[in-house]
Amino acid sequence: QVQLVESGGGSVQAGGSLRLSCVASVSGATTDYMGWFRQTPGQEREGVAAIATGSGTTFTANSVKDRFTISQDSAKNTVYLQINSLQSDDTAMYYCAARDPLGLWNGPLVPSTYHHWGQGTQVTVSS
Image (cartoon, rainbow, N blue to C red):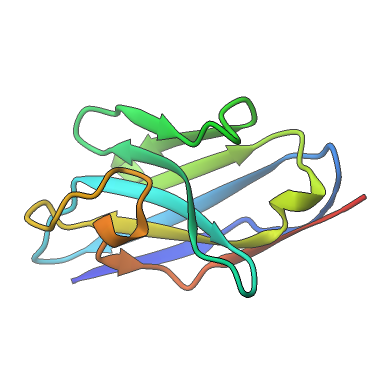
């Protein structure tokens, strides 16, 4: 069983920063990738960053790579998403996800690669 709990979202002004956290509780299961995704109403879920939990290799969407940074603290079973220079189009619900190693692989930033999802944390950016 894998449970993911996100936190750190909020309302910020454009230009500000946020650090989102995702705490993973894993029992009787394993995961090999963790990802951050975002979604706005009526839009598809978009992958913004992912990390291979074993090697620490990171993947970041080109659209946000200069501003978003994913990292992990393995001792705390926590993955972070640092977002700098927030823009109004960063407004979205941000979700954390975890992948089962035996699942189908569609790429690190593709939602169908992941099997476990948190409830999300809202980020709202005002200009």
